[in-house]
Length: 124
Image 1 (tube, rainbow, N blue to C red):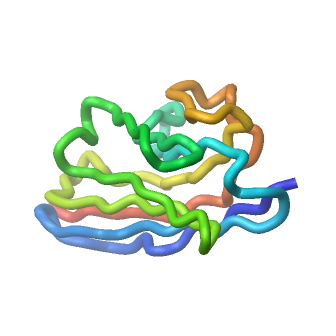
Image 2 (tube, rainbow, N blue to C red; image 1 turned 90 degrees about the vertical axis):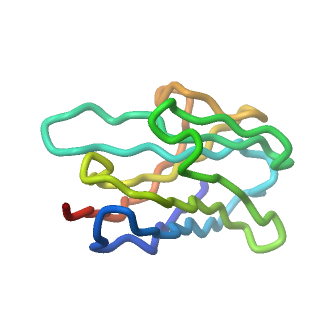
């Protein structure tokens, strides 16, 4: 089992920044690729970003490229999502997830463990 707890969400004005954190506990964190997804009301859960076990490989949804940065600290068993230049359409619940594959994935179905989510609201 891997337990994931997100934090760092909140209310921010358009153009602002937030840093989301996800703390992991349980099985060896370094065995898992990690990802961030988001879900707005009435929408499906969408891929945002993913990072490999070593942190050396990252990839992003087109909507996140150039504005969001995913990173991880294996010593602290944590993964982060730095978000800048936020837009109202970024408003959603953000989830971190753990993938037993080494590289993470754009597909939510490959992730085995999920956090409870943290709300991000961007006002215009």
